[in-house]
Image (cartoon, rainbow, N blue to C red; front, side):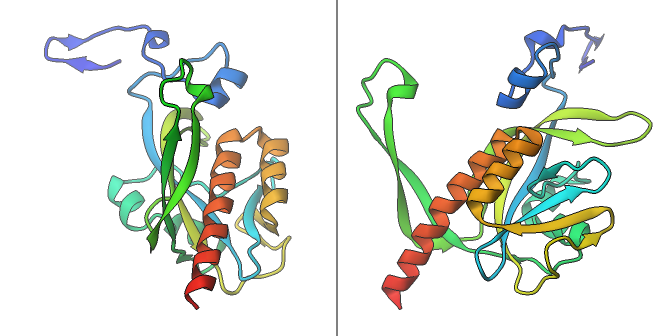
Length: 218
C-alpha cells in the first residue's frame, strides 16, 4: 500500500495499473500498481557474424533475450547497463554503437494512431545509449516470494568478439547464437515475448542502417 502524510491509504490496484501487451494477453485477471515499478536493462548482443545471443534457462527451457534482474541502484542501469550480461554468461561484452534514430510522421490529421504513417530516420552520428525504451514486465525469482513488476526497460546493443559455441552452459544458463530472424521467432515461440521481438526488429533496422553508413564512409 502507498504511504501518505496521514498514514496508509488502501487502494484497488486495478485502477492504478499500466498493463503491458504481455499482461493484457496472458495475465488478464492480474494487475500491477504504480508502486510495482522497476527499471531494468535489456540487451541485444551480437557476435562478429551478426548472430544474436539468446539465453536459455536450463531448468525451465525458457529462451529469451538477456534482461537484468532488479538492480540494486538506478546508477547500475545507466552506467553499466551490460554488466549483468557478463555476470550471467561469463562473456566479455562491449557497448556497440548504432546510429541514433528519429521518426518522421506523415498525415498527422488521421483519426486513429494505428493509421499514422511513419518511418525511421538516422543522424550522422552513432551512440551507445539505449536504442529503445519500452514498458515490460520483470519477473523476480526469489524462492520465498516470487514476484513480478512493471518495468521500464532500456535496451542496449552489445558486441562479443570471442565466445564458446552455442549450447555452452554457464551458471544454469545455456547460450545460443542465431540470426535475428531466428531469434525473433525463438522468443515469441518460447515465451510470447512480443516486447523482446519488437526490440530485435528495431535493432535489425538500426544495425542495417549503421553498416550501410559505415560502408559509405569507408
